[in-house]
Image 1 (tube, one colour):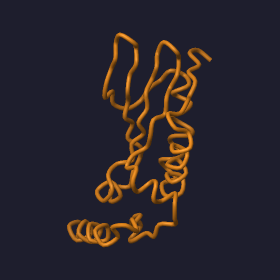
Image 2 (image 1 turned 30 degrees about the vertical axis):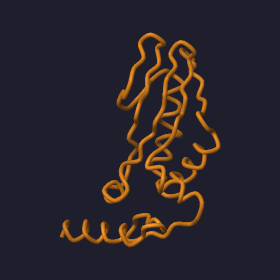
Image 3 (image 1 turned 90 degrees about the horizontal axis):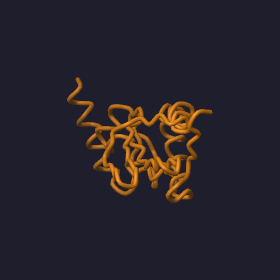
Image 4 (image 1 turned 90 degrees about the vertical axis):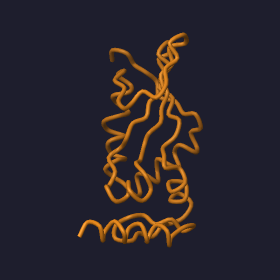
Length: 139
């Protein structure tokens, strides 16, 4: 253990809900988080794009795009892990996972899928339309 960063949560309950949703609907992204990214964070290896930096307090915010099915990305957006590194305190703060709306909805109730893509119950027609449109474009 060289650096031994500690992983903490901005809001553990909310984060875990989104994490379980990712596990349920995108196992590849979940496995990458659990077995590649979290252990790397603990070792002080931070992946993703730096979105802001506070050099005075040595705080860096990151966004890490998780592996996402192409059609899911086009319908709902990429699955992105948002986290903050407090270098002086050796803390990695897991902030949230986006797209939050579909992940929260996926945790609250069983979502249906259409042609292999999660469909929101609140705007199912719009999602199905996008999926059909994308499938037509690909042909």
